[in-house]
Image 1 (tube, rainbow, N blue to C red):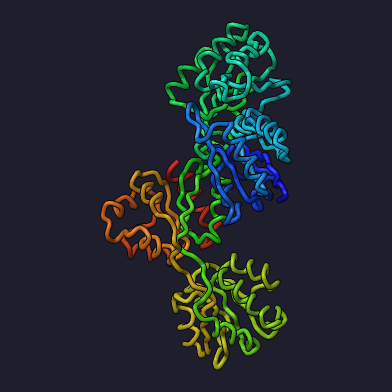
Image 2 (cartoon, rainbow, N blue to C red):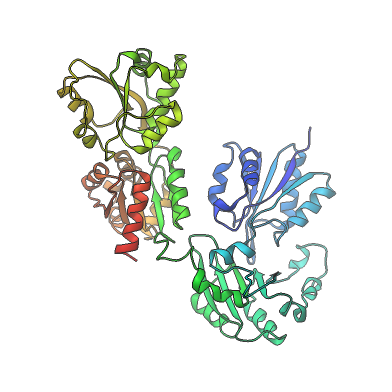
Length: 526
């Protein structure tokens, strides 16, 4: 059997966008993923469906698995021929114990590869608006562990006290202009005292950055003399990065990630109810705005029960005067059926094409290289038929590939104009088999700030999944978060269930929904 490889991958400081391209590509192909608690959960969605997932997270005084056991897991899986991704918060070689794991691999003749990551020592201060160097404030920085302990030999072969003896505080206090302590919250009292004892001024600026780069990031600033009491008052707990030096003063001018004026969605926990195939685009955009998306796909895009009608329509596509796409979800199966018939966009040369909105128009260009002839000003069925400019439809054939359960506004109105409308099922929207316990607990605990709905089907399936109509307590809790609908049709569906939307996006697209959320929280609810 060929021995596998252990990849020591830095997951970055938390923000999933900060993982390296190489690290992400390895996660997508690994047989086994061994991950820490500081790796963002969304990174695990990169994994293959059949990948083995092993959690080995550590927090202060609590280890899901001790380091020697982690080492053994890595080697055992690799010796079994597996490709092992060891996903570690930050950088594996910056207080990540990656060196110890690499040593154990080498001692057991297992190949390892190091994939560096963005260390929280630099990223957490950066997301707090604190550059670790600045020409006017600091020309050097040092990264120091906030504690050294032997854990009764668990950390290696050294004797108790040897590691702590390496920390020469007289040297550390003046080692660099900026001092960065990782894992130092619990030892903050001792750290500040030692630094002052060895020459640092009590007035030296200090910042604690908790959960740096996450939507839950919190920052407390003070001085060596005051920071301990300020941190206790703010109840700052690990993980947090401690920054000591004049660069801390720059936060007042450079704060950006956790600035509510600039990023009104920062820290907002937002439920995303889109289909899993589409949820990532909305969730990723929300993360870029500093929000904390909770993905709860209430619909699943599935093939139609019978594709005969779609297949027949595509085989005779030349007879249609118009083809109308009312969702991005219809474009891909239509394109696939064209390919199955050994056809391409040239088969549509005699047809005109309409798209319900810009996202669907973009999908047409992406999948078929076709530019839509007509896109209404608002992405709703009523707007499409109200703005329809081709009035001479008598006897003309129109193809409408769509969801099996879509509304009949468009075909009914076009038939009134004299058109012959073929409505064919291109896809189904079904309720996925998803875990609802997390969302139920978040709702009952009042821990969701916003519920977003991007189609009427997401509303129907949300209500069904949580059994809202039979659970009065849960239905009452739904009124606490802000409710946002992508457009008026979805908003009306919400109202039919007794949920009154606070936000209805004027532009019925995902960017329009994001903008509406920003305006709501930035203007109405700072």
